Image (cartoon, rainbow, N blue to C red; front, side, top):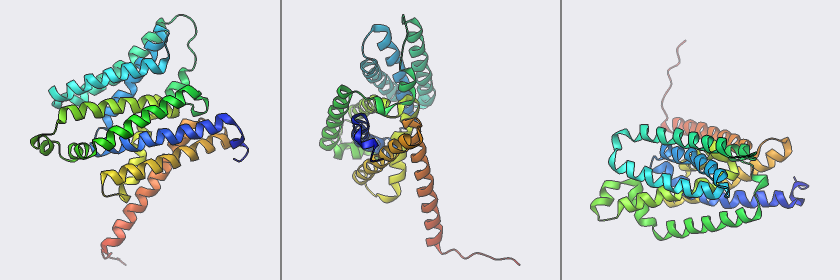
Length: 279
């Protein structure tokens, strides 16, 4: 591991994981508390349409993913307000439609289209310096917005009806959250890829949830957990020569199972329920 730190690309990968973890911990906590996992999954997979469109138009695929994903977030916001009873079906259509549109655009792109595997499953070891700066700037924007609007966002997360009655602009806040989810997806594409991005959004908050009683605390602990998962996953990928995205997620799943089993065991133990022993 000491040898790995001697390489600039490896240090860059670690820094990328730490910066992405800040974004992941903040937005992922809101996604879990607000029960927006399926919506986030639809937005994340629709990002592949933007990558395909970027290849077709000859622009940076991540730029195409950013524009396309923010647009999809706006569409999802409109559907959430007008078709609440059918939102799961509509999200499924957006999920599949975005992937299909990306495949169509790539098939229409002349010449060879490289790096598709890295967009689907991530390769944090190949993040260029300019994308590292982009991740930093996007993360900074998310931190500033969430910090400034935290009381309103907390109210909408736990009781949207009460927030609406209180006069808070709930529709605008929901749109903002969906746009921030779209930005987070673009940030995490190079870390774990489109296929696994929803896991990195949900696993750290799920691991941190038993240790926090407030949304702010959940965001802080989730950020720390995400940093631990990405850093350990990157080192595991170096040691065992396996894909970084897969190692990050599998390690996260292992930690989640351990924490969940320990939480269940402690809950049962604290109940002091007598067991009947039959001879």
